[in-house]
Amino acid sequence: MISNAITKLLEFVLCDNLVAASSEEVYQFGFKAKHSTGLCAGILKHTINYYIDRSSHVFCASIDFSKAFSRVNYWHLFNKLHDDNFI
Image (tube, rainbow, N blue to C red; front, side, top):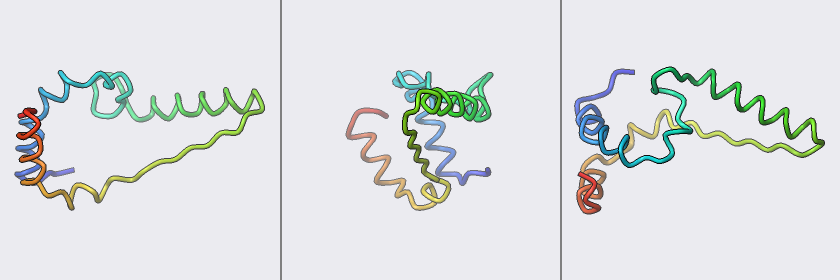
């Protein structure tokens, strides 16, 4: 996906901080070296099978954020990150 200039600037500014601050990166599959969303799908399938084999109910939800980024108020986001001393 081709990002606009403001998005690229935001990614550049936040990249180091997000990598350093994130303890959840263990759960990140896409956009991470030697990982893929295919690996994530395999883990999801394994988890679902685990609970089904034990006669448990399985519920799953997903969210499509594909259009969320076109609606972000970047100036508000920058100000919020600045106020929180993140950048």
